Amino acid sequence: MGDHLEDGDLVETPGKIPVPREVAEAVKTLIAWAGDDPTREGLADTPLRVARAWKEYCQGYEDDPSVHLSRTFEEVGGYDEIVILRDIPFQSHCEHHMAPIIGKAHIAYLPKNRVVGISKLARVLHGFARRLQVQERLTAEVADCIWDNLQPVGVAVVIEASHSCMTARGVRTPGVTMTTSRMMGVFRDDDRSRKEVLALMGC
Ligand SMILES: Nc1nc2c(ncn2[C@@H]2O[C@H](COP(=O)(O)OP(=O)(O)OP(=O)(O)O)[C@@H](O)[C@H]2O)c(=O)[nH]1
Ligand SMILES: [Zn+2]
Image 1 (cartoon, helix red, strand yellow):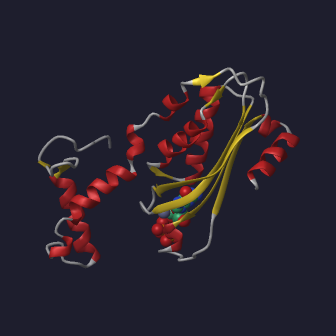
Image 2 (tube, protein in one colour):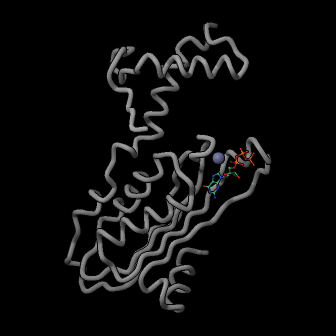
Image 3 (cartoon, helix red, strand yellow):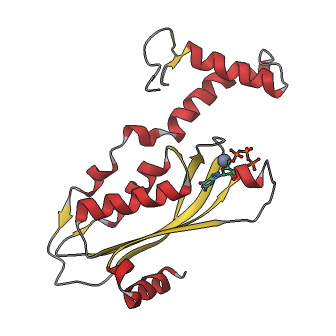
């Protein structure tokens, strides 16, 4: 654990990030294990592409999502109602199979004195989604990050997603979505507030 494989023998390609040779070799081994010939022409550069693709899928490890919430605005004309971002598409990968998780998130908070630029809520989501995840933890991490950094009156996060490890392999059950939610503050403690936010989310 904690090995980032950044030192050692690197494969350099102009304009692209270097790839440790052992990472490329690991992908080559995987291709052979899957049943194909990693030396055939069409697959020759695939190990490097896959290695770089995984760095991109997992870009969140280089992101501290709380930083996105450090810039807030206090001049909001006394606005003290729910702010909600609906249907934010995201992609992640499940930590059990490294298979795609594709879904959408609804993120809401009830501000106290200060708000954040709305794009930042999506940035927080992507910062945690671009890692190896389980949906429950992703949901909790997004909600906790907003709660800790904005100290609002309430936070609500609902995530609906389809897991390729269920649709494309294993039980092979397409069309199934998983829904998770985390309610904090007034959205957890007050029934009416929770109903209001869920109605605004269309849930
Ligand atoms: N709770 C939860 N489970 C997940 C998530 N992503 C994948 N899983 C499940 O993780 C479980 C892993 O089960 P295991 O029995 O260890 O692995 P497996 O033998 O590959 O299981 P199958 O998928 O049933 O073939 C599976 O049931 C997956 O559907 C997630 O985000 N949350
Ligand atoms: Zn999985």
